[in-house]
Image 1 (cartoon, rainbow, N blue to C red):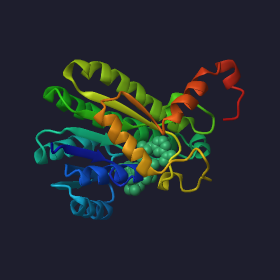
Image 2: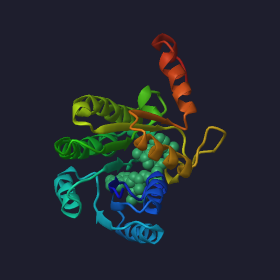
Image 3: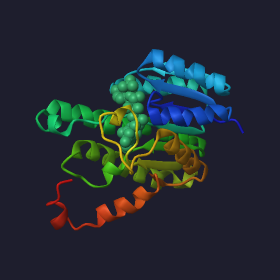
Image 4: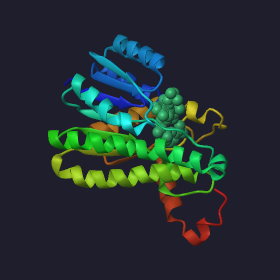
Length: 246
Ligand SMILES: NC(=O)c1ccc[n+]([C@@H]2O[C@H](COP(=O)([O-])OP(=O)(O)OC[C@H]3O[C@@H](n4cnc5c(N)ncnc54)[C@H](OP(=O)(O)O)[C@@H]3O)[C@@H](O)[C@H]2O)c1
């Protein structure tokens, strides 16, 4: 069955790998990102791959005031959405955040508040329809605060807790709420990092996202071995954890 799928942060490498698969499955797409030229190219590619209808909307998602009109615009194209994937984000420089309150709040805004703003608007629509899947890319970093990236971790953790509550609220409405927690993924966001055995490619993450949506999962650690790693990290007593250089 053909689905109407909203992808927010569609220029992200993980989002692009995911929407390519949905395009090949001939679904209808609505793509949102701030780079209009890149969006147009991605939309053309999606059509060539088989997407039936592809709409685009360019906006800076940090501008929370624009979210209401964005969502209204989406529903003008597709009166009912089957799936939304929220994928936008930035990886802050932790040291720079520590020296600059404005930068810390800016990072909290794009990685935390902007997603919560969009979810608040979308959740009511999904609740009224009593169906569909809301999927959000957070991060394993949200599972426990570490000195090397706790601004990012706190923003992602805030979204994960929000999703937990939303899932509880929407359970009776039959709406899936999926929290996607990737580990290290080789994308532009992590271009400067040295890659190793724990790293995954966006295409692998995309396949796992689509499978988790199909199976109506609640939480996805991806690749799956991150569930074990994060179980151990969450289990370390705070009295020890606070001494570690992580
Ligand atoms: N890569 C990893 O290791 C990793 C691990 C865990 C979680 N994640 C999460 O996975 C998601 C996707 O990231 P990715 O790895 O695919 O990295 P990416 O390719 O760098 O994608 C990040 C996307 O966010 C968009 N974005 C940032 N600020 C925005 C704004 N103000 N308005 C609109 N769009 C904005 C970027 O748009 P522009 O291209 O216009 O800047 C870009 O398309 C993010 O939520 C990230 O936090 C990534």
